[in-house]
Length: 81
Image (cartoon, rainbow, N blue to C red; front, side):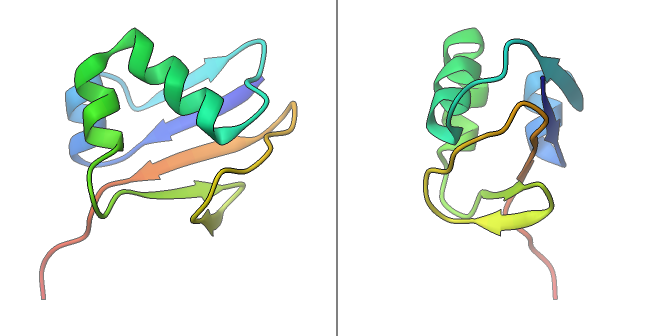
């Protein structure tokens, strides 16, 4: 099972903050494709510049393998000063 967390405007767009997926996708790119197929607006928001991904509480920049118990958090761009 993969635990997916959305923060800020990403959760507003999706209408949820936390979701559990079973079976777990094999890769981060598979997870993105699954979320995009389910909600095109969310997929577009996840692909926007500045959106970061934390895999098991570590920021990742490229595609990564997911384990059966991965936690994936999508973080919107930060603003402010």
